[in-house]
Length: 324
Image 1 (cartoon, rainbow, N blue to C red):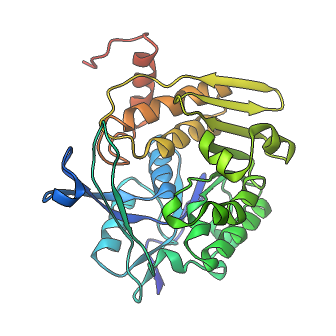
Image 2 (image 1 turned 180 degrees about the vertical axis):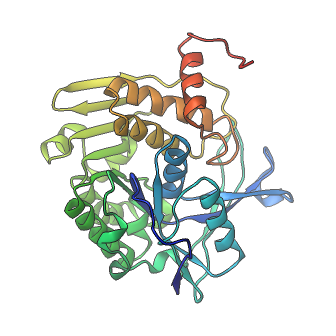
């Protein structure tokens, strides 16, 4: 295995994410997966989605992870680099494949998702691959519950990354991102539940907190400084020791709901990094999510900074909806 080769003198990242990035193949909209013959290629992965969202919003972002030495891995790294994400610490493994995600796309019925990740390069992440220099200077380290659920070694690596983030003085944001195809509710509670209280910022769905046996007040009592909850009605609340803020979802025609949570996280965290008040952070998260669900893949709708400003003005009724 080897690190992805990039020029020396790596710039200091503002944000570091670590996790699995897979090749995504999305069936043509409206066609069930079992009947689809035409697919669109993209990249999927909770942490890489957030990295892409933050990079497009102007934050220098580094992605840590592993891909196979195969066409899928090269495609994944090429797309991340195209969004100016630093992949210089990505590990290319010649003995394990890049994960593959197949899914269909429907705006009005359940979406079928197939993961092909058993034995993938990402699942072989180990603690000794993570070093202090990878997070040195970072303001924020973002992780999700998916990575520690991939394998025992990836779980240990996640714990190591939390230690490195603390030593570097970086904030930690954590999204449980529960995917029951990765394990039973009991395993999610035992592996991921304890990680919630180790973050500075948590971003979780209401249903995820219920499954993990956690609440926003309980997280704040455990030392989390900012607890964000995404509710079933698509609204979101942000709670701190100073109060609670609420944001309704912006109503848009949804083409595909997949990726909305990662998009919300990118918008919210960008607001935090920019020093915005929490009501503006929530609005940014809701706006980025609203843009993403209008597109088919996880990343097509992720805006740049100017696009986010225009979207917020439009959603709040302060600007023309057509940019001329």
